Length: 415
Ligand code: FES
Ligand SMILES: [Fe+2]
Image (tube, rainbow, N blue to C red):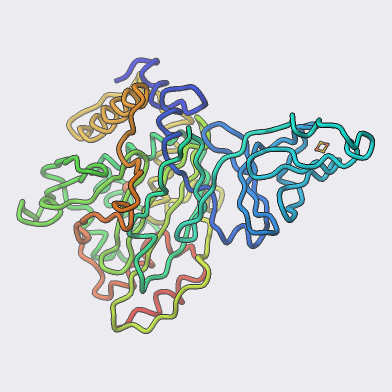
């Protein structure tokens, strides 16, 4: 149980709040690069700030304040030009730093005027990596965009699944520090749903229902490995010896086995909304003949289905749990038990990192040395439920099924 102040400290992400300052030390994914090819502007809300992301005609990416400094219209309706974004209302143009660089009528009437030099809105750096666009809202100098292995390994294809969730980011991340929920939410509840709809219960679901006997948490350089013993496994199995990690501060790493591995980013939009970004890498075996991927596709993982929260596959079941905790979970009324040891550890680590930032230090996973940022790797258990013999087919059991092009990807795996 937390006090109201402790809960606010962990959940509020606006400028000047302790968590807002911690989150401003990280690059956050805000869009797929392919989105701007389809439409060159996108309204973005991040850490409580309203912004517009755009690509100008020269290919420069910009992320500037969303509202025009003249009379405050929405620049996501603006026109990308050779060197900036032009407001559609009276033609003022801003560059990627937020500096006003043109004011057509002002310049006509006062050719020697210097008005535009005095007009500047916020502008933040944007970088592309692995088909994602990352934004950084923190102090200069910006750290490096982390080159996690999922973004940079070869002989792989990738896709990106987005969902906007009406709840605070911490509910999502606490779920990733809570191994026991998998047995109940995805195992028992998932089985109950499948039985009701007359579906045959697949072996992987039964395996997921095995009761937890022991859970463990080991901090490492990038986060925490969650480990478990479930009925029928022992401390010699890699679900206990290795486990799988959540990555500090707001990422889960998960896998279907040898074929696909993903990062789930819980990007704080504001105190009551989270952009959930699933970045999946499909790693092909050496014998597979696969052309390089030209465009990393993006798709939506639906929060609703048939007018209710979607509970069709495990990740939307998680969404349902997070969203039904309310816009900001009331942690003054929770009752934590032994299954919540990892949740308590996550909160402690976040509190320590907020203190580090307040002291002027860099928290975990802020990288500044290019030599150690070439390919950031970590170990991971194999799946802890019995996989389908065809590993690639396992992909259909998960949320990647919502990518309309998933059949093409699965079809490229041999066997
Ligand atoms: S409101 Fe944007 S130029 Fe006038
Ligand atoms: Fe889950």
